[in-house]
Every structure is written in C-alpha cells, then in structure tokens.
Length: 194
Image (tube, rainbow, N blue to C red; front, side, top):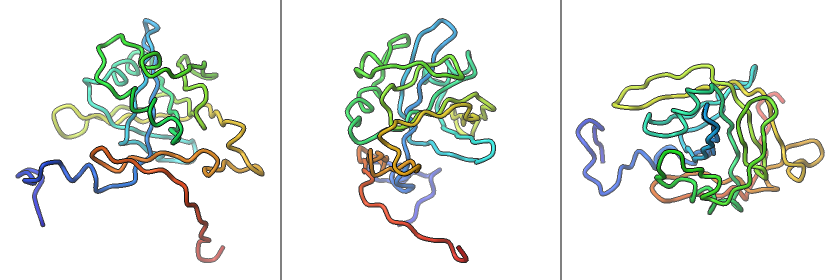
C-alpha cells in the first residue's frame, strides 16, 4: 500500500500514529500564572540534546499545557512507568479548562526545585524545564515546544550501582491507536571501537 497523506489513506484509523513506535511518553505538568495546575501525556516527545540537556514535545493550542507554559515559561516532564499506566490514561481526558488533572487522575503532586511547577511525586524521573522556544509547525494548530532541563529528579529505587536502571520501573511507551508497550527486556550493545 502507498498513500499520499494529503489524499488520505482510506483506512479506518490513521496509520501514521502507529508507524513511529515505540515512542516515549512525556507526562507534562504545568502551572499557570493564576496557580492552576495541569497534567497531560504527550507521545510526540523526546530528548533532543545533551549539553545543555534539552527536550521537546508537540501540542496543539487547544491544549491547556501549551497555554499555561506560555504564561509561565516552564514545564516538567514526568517519566511514565507501567505501574502508573491507569493514572496516565486518566489524565488524558478532555477536561474543561481549570480542571486539575492531578486530582482527576489521583496523582500526588510534589514541588519542583528550579521552577514554579508541580511534578508527579513518585515518577521514576522528572525533568524540570524552562521553555527555550515554541515553534509553529505546518498545519492548522501544531506547535513544538523546546525546553532546557534545569533540574532532574531520580527516584532512589531506580538507581542501581550509580546507573539509572529502567528495568527497575518498566517504562511505558506509546505504539499508536490505543496500543502501548512496556520495556521489560533490556540488552546492551557496544559501539564499534569501544
């Protein structure tokens, strides 16, 4: 099968959502200038640079996350583990503006250290970020948000011999449609010459 996205695919569901997989989930927390908090998962998310450490996620302007981080210039990326899959999913609902998804999903908040924003208290890791740029992407309402990581929280039980060990919490990943995956099998490869 071949199709041009501009012409449509003719399938019951858009296959593009399932092609680039697995995708990490950025569970983005924000706080508005008025103090209201927001929590929403984004599967168009990733790390994009080491020095300084930077991440990005994409959103539409209809989402509270984008409007709130525009007000304050900060956000926090919370790593989603398999054990929190139901809370992550509950926070993805189409709630009215002003509804606190932390409360709706029964997720405990903690304060960040370098920014005025909540984080998921028991997430395996959380990345405190300052917005560096918001890019308007092609399409009606697509935006890419880039942030520099200014603080990193690591849950103590996720550290083993000085290494952040993903096998201790089983990261959740997005596959597409309604499908997810969990990282359980891990192996190492040395680069040529190492």
